[in-house]
Image: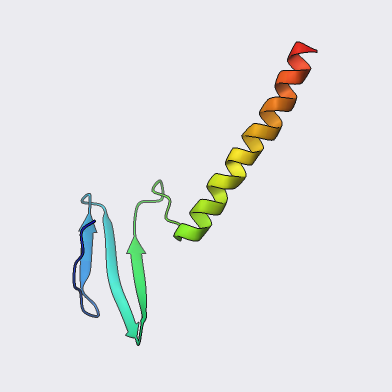
Length: 72
């Protein structure tokens, strides 16, 4: 993991096309602005984990039912 210090209105550039800017700092909370191409999904980690779990569950349930139907 790369750890960097940034101040308000300072930014990071990732892969030449993603910019993360520090918008606000209040106590222990930091507000970030993220500029990325539309094809690059950006999620909060907890939302990303929920999506991954839902996808796994859908594949397990739907895939198993589809396999049962194919094998009859």
